[in-house]
Image 1 (cartoon, one colour):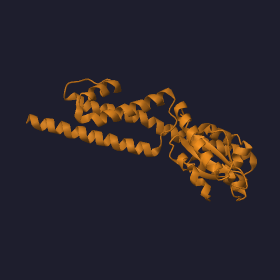
Image 2 (cartoon, rainbow, N blue to C red):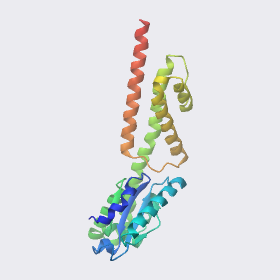
Image 3 (cartoon, rainbow, N blue to C red):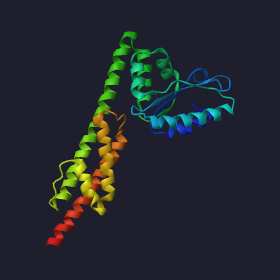
Image 4 (cartoon, rainbow, N blue to C red):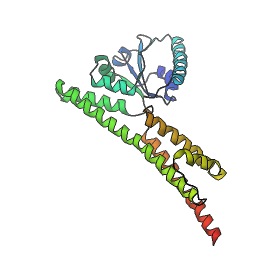
Length: 249
């Protein structure tokens, strides 16, 4: 399903902290044109949504509203909510949430959770008794939580890997590297490892957010990217050590 009017919402697709965008209401359910009815919209945000991001979101929404107004389209925007809040409200079977998810149009779903929940709700309504819906939604939510926890735990493992690799290169100079902060300080003195120092700083910051419980999202795609960076770091260190060893011969 596509309306030309959806083009006005493209800016939301570029915002990483916007996890999902859901259109619903009579415009979607009954196929009415947005000019004949309000366009209902719900925005779902990452769990670590911040104040600085809120300002950006408000500016984007203001731009969208102005564009729609020039086309005589009224936007009915529900208060945005985080992904965890949305999942909990689906689990508790909040009527308008379940209805909008079941019959609405998913415009953006960067985590894939909205589509999964939509399928679960649809299947349960046709195949299962009402009393079983809550149980299966709870199981689905538990599976989502477990998957996210597994991804988040990989951040600590990646940080440890970066630390171990840095210890390899530091050992040639007789340095002892006890923690990530020491590793980053050591890398500052090695111009050839400047890019890896920045990567280590970025990863350490993500890990601190994870340990503090303020990191909302870490996707499988990001894990693949970090694993590739880690492998590249190891290969670079390995080549450097081999060069040093050859120079001693």
